[in-house]
Image 1 (cartoon, rainbow, N blue to C red):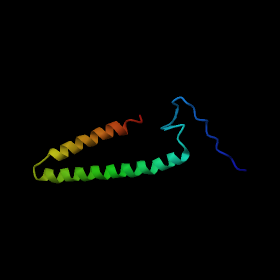
Image 2 (image 1 turned 90 degrees about the horizontal axis):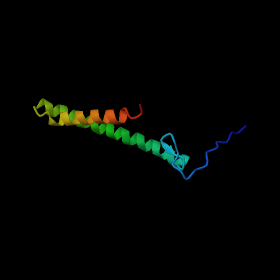
Image 3 (image 1 turned 45 degrees about the vertical axis):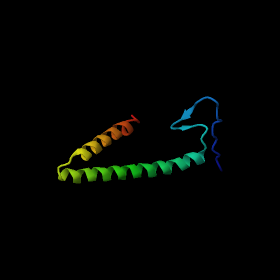
Image 4 (image 1 turned 180 degrees about the vertical axis):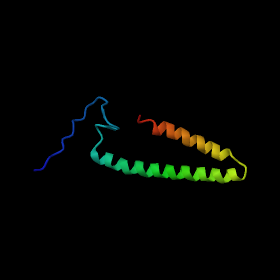
Length: 85
């Protein structure tokens, strides 16, 4: 018994199913998910490097990078992390 997946017919109006429009094919959606993961990983690593560099500069008495990086992290966390709630 093989069950076939039936997709809804695309419409001219703007209808969204979750985060993806109805007009997007499954192949396009499958290609977006790994790219989002890679981009999120790259941003996470970059933010970690900037925070670590800010900590090193703070040891020398220069707190500007740590303050800016900390604020950027908090803003990104509040905008992206709380967007789904």
